[in-house]
Amino acid sequence: MANPFAHALGIRHLVCGSCNGCEHELNALAGPAYDTTQQGWSIVASPRHADVVTVTGPMTTAMRAAAAATLAAAAQPCVVVAIGDCAAGEGPWAGAPHAGAGAGIELDAAVTVRGCPPAPAAIAAGLAEAARRLG
Amino acid sequence: MIATRVGAAALPAAVWVALRDHEPLAAYATASDVHYLFAGVDGLLDVGAAREEAIPALAATYPVFAWDEREMRDEHGVSFADESDARPLFIGAAGVPPALAAEGEGVTLVVVGPVHAGIIEPGRFTFSTGGETVIALDAQLSYSRRGVEAALAGRDAVAAAPRVARICGACSVARSWSYARALEALAGVACDEASEYARLVAAELERIYNHLFDLAQAAAGAGYGYSQTHLLGLKERANALCAEAFGHRLLFDAIVPGGVGTGVLRDARAARDAAVLLRAAARAEVRALLGNISVQRRFEGAGVLPAEIARAFGVVGPGRRASGGTLDARTLLPYGAYAALAPAVATDAAGDVAARVRVKAAELDAAFELVERALAALGDHAPPAPQHVMPGRGTAVTITEGPRGAETLALACAADGALERIAVRSASFRNWPAVLRAMEGNIVPDFPLVNKSFNLCYACADG
Image (cartoon, rainbow over all chains, first blue to last red; front, side, top):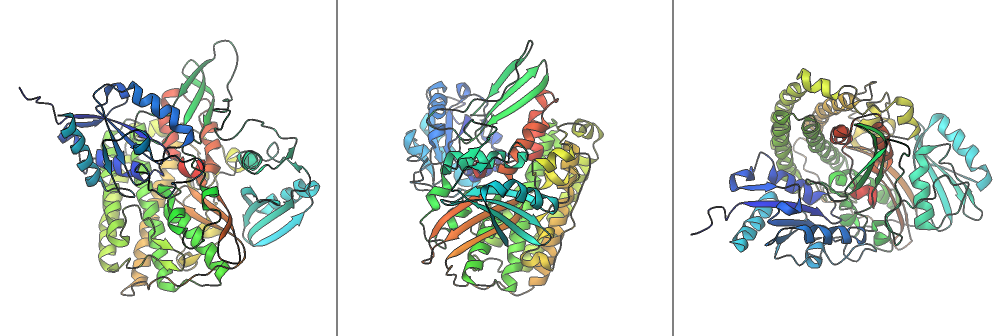
């Protein structure tokens, strides 16, 4: 029997040196205008509850250990979704002294949503792709 | 700008004199000097001293400079005599700097972060508590530190503008405007009138979407889902208006050196119509929030920032104006179209969450007023393509009133137009110590409420 809750996602968000632009758009997506609770998507307060970990930013030196700990704490299966050009490794701070290769590159994201920042609808498309991958 | 240079020994006296009739802004170091920046009715004041000998630490006397001096010491190797805080400001090879914590029987430490249970930037907070009451709060930030100042140094200054716009997403316009004015000053270029009005519209739209978000978050902090939901809905409409008018929902690159982004505000009338409708809706939702007595009771007395602390810490923006201050870069040192369109500055004396909410509510409506008047002044005159800007050798300091207060930028260009040094002192960098202080004596569960009543950024504070 097909999983009737296959589309539902618990989403944990992990900021790895983002400028907060991607967070504004992710907040917008979770807000009343897009109302993603219709899709069964919710922002969860612990990685233990997460089907998806969304990551933003170039990955800063200071966040690397906490980011790894967050992913290690996530229940499996878990899909990492990279949001934004920084996470994809091609943002404005690539090569900065304390910036890494991109949070999505370093954390092996399965889905990448480009944009600076991507609009809420683009983030939603990325999350829908993550839901498909989780089956 | 008035620049004075003194010997290191004379720095405390020179700063004391400056503070008699100026507001402190920031301090920053170059390879050869330290600079203490102030703003007054006569303009910006730069008190500089050569780094040939140890610089007397001023933070113990003037706490406004506490973070600046630690930054100058850690990042630029300035040696201070009599420094009061030996802890590194930023997370580094030695790990996370120790938190200041209370000690004693019955004191419990509560440590949260850096990853938080929502869509929030990273930071670690250490609460020293006695029961429910917060005795002290310390924050270890810099988890978002990319090293933007070092990453910008050496780049072509004009070509670096999109990077400057992306230091922080939530105060992008204010920083872009500071940056554009600095480069235009060094290039001897004057922005045209239509672009000045367009810049003001962008800056006030940034204030509008931020203040709508802040008010929604304040409602959330008090557990009032009705206002949270409705105000977030209006914030989305504001971001849609930003995209329609300036081609970007968060207004990145709306302001560029030499003017505004090519093609912005092609239909000022449509933008004005949308702003008028949004303003009416915002007024109704703000009335609902301010008119709810039980929510107001939650706001009142929470997170009090006394006026004398706000002044001593050099707090800027709505946080300052809600604690009896009047400091607003738009009226203290009018720039661009603010010379013609002066904002009504809202102030409050209470210094609590309620006061900050009232000030932001008043500023929200005043921002709409400015947007409407600037768009009316613009009429059918679409802003031209940006002028060519070729900055020459020199140093420029600018302040711009962003949603969280004065955004200070100091930069030096080489003769070939490359950035030699850029110092970014954001309103959030300035205000974070005050948030920690405002939590003292409050209960732990009120931290989201008190914190969100300031709603400071991490990215621009971390650098």
